[in-house]
Structures are given as C-alpha cells and as structure tokens.
Length: 266
Image 1 (spheres, rainbow, N blue to C red):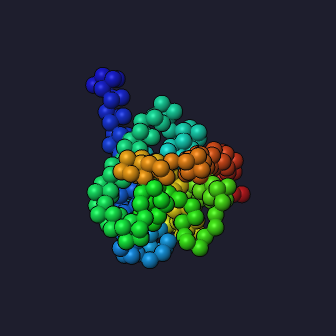
Image 2: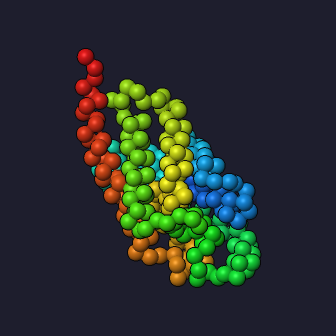
Image 3: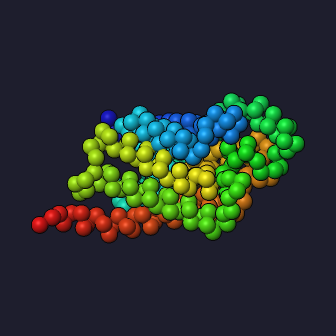
C-alpha cells in the first residue's frame, strides 16, 4: 500500500469516527433536552445529564477504534496542545465533529418541528423570540426562568466546566497515572464526568462544553427560522471562545501534573 493510500485511510477513519460519535452524542443528548422542553418527558438537569453521560460513553466505545473519540473541538485542541494529536489532524477532527452535530440538529428538527410550531402558537410567540423551543437548537443563558446569569459569569461557567472535563480526560487516559481506571471502563467515567458537570452548569448555560455541540445545532436553528437570535457575540464568547480557552488552561495543568505523577512514591 502506498503512503498516500495509507494517509487517505487514516483520515477516512478519523472522519467516520468523529462524525458518527458526535452525531450520536448530539442526537441523544440534545434530543433528551428537546423531549424535556416540549413534552415534559424528563425532569431536571440530573436526568438529562445522565442521558448525555451514557450517550458519550456509548459513542466512545463505538468509535474509539476509528478515531481518538474526541467529539469536541475543545478536546481536540487540548490534545494537539499536549502533543497527543498531530496539529495536521485538527482540521479533519473539527470538520467531522461539525458535520455530525449539524446532522443531529437537522434530524431533530424533522422530529420536533410540529411540536415547536404548536408550542410557539400556544404561547403566542414566534421565531424572533427566545423560547424553550429555540434553546433546544440555540443555547442560551440563563437556562431557567428564575436564574440570573450575566455573560461573563456564563462564559466563566462554560470555561470551568470544560476545564474540568478536559482535565479529567487527561487524568483518566494518561499512562503515568497509576490511579486511572482500566481502558475498558474509562469511557464510563468520562461520561459520568459530563453528567456531573451538567447538573451544575446545565441550569445556568445549557452546559454546552463543546463548540461543535453548540455551533452545529445553532446553524440548523439559523436556517430553519431563528436567524434573528441564533448568533450573537455573547453566544460566541460563552460557547466557543470560553471552552477553547479552557483547553489551554487544562493543558497547562496537565503539563504541570504529569511530571509529578511520573516521580512515583518513595
């Protein structure tokens, strides 16, 4: 096999793994939020968080032999910063993640368009207004009627949540960490970490924690009619810039902690 063919197969595996995994994560995760918002099928951040966590674990198991199962540009960015993933692979990862998120958002719109229309009509609202329906595709803050969350606080919450997630991923997958779980159950702990973060950050910001998970459905929301509210500078800061900044911080912590782990005990 030629080198060109080998590289082509390598990139095709990444595209397949990241597209499928991100699709599964967004389809079931955002879908659970949609059924909670539109049908009252679920109650609270804990139930939705558990669905996100289980879905992420399943997606990792399903796709980690294809790609490194990042499903998140912030994770990919951190892996490139740490040297675990080559920089040349980053565009492929991010594009595949965006494709998976957009596909999930589009299919969920087909599922729930009629219910969204009914909800808006019942509440004498339209698609120029922020609502429970628009929040399914376009993350907002605060995410509860009683919550008061400023943009800086929302960005900080998203940043802290993403920082914790990436730091835990480093910890659970680093060979020098003697306390890390077996590779066969590590995806469960990563999923549980997401679930726990959602219970705290979710009521404040929807717990995006992932630029692709936010931007993919947001693009769909813009196309189907929420064009006046889908994109704003605040949304980009909170759901894209803050998670990427958290990647830098988490990688910095990893580079401090990893040498200490390698020292071992006396």
